[in-house]
Image (cartoon, rainbow, N blue to C red; front, side, top):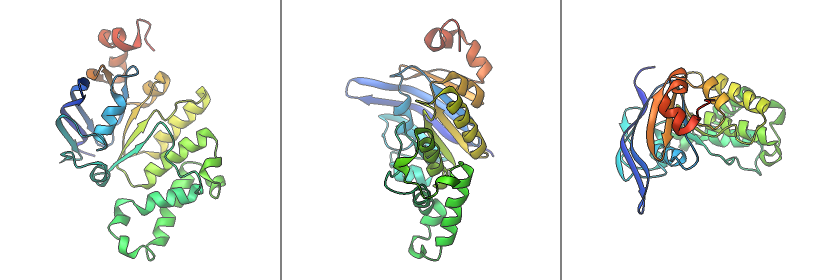
Length: 250
């Protein structure tokens, strides 16, 4: 893949007198695995909101797959290939696992163009949902209500919903939060296996997950990018160690 999936230029976000993002510059190549780390309150989730179109920046430019968002909102960001998972599950608890995936597949870009003929396209939607169901390892729970899944299974379903939506770029907000070390390792392995060829930007506090998954890492502190680079460079950066990782490193 060529070009950038995400490019942020001088992004500032203020809420009243509070500056949450302060001149953020960030470029993420198409197909790249990128992690965004920083202490609580650094502005990471707000930055996700800006990229996903849910938050209109006070100043600056957001360019998604070569097209400037221009504050046009999450529907346009989705059409430009952005998919997002949240810290809390976004699945419909009273729908089955398969129906959750089918809903996402039904609204994938290729299907949106054919909304007027969805009955004819039903087989292709079912096939797409079934493929994702298998990829995320939930075949045995096809007819299980999403609300009855274990926490780790719900997080896998959240990933599946983003995949089924046809997103080219996935924004994953703390996908391993609340998991045991073993569960977190399995989740990261699942993300790696199911997102080949897609861009992934993930917020994560588990440093084992971050340094084992990301090709590049950006460190955000008080709304400012402190550093961006390869994992080894980030680990060794004195400014990063002082601001976030601590003297002992991860």
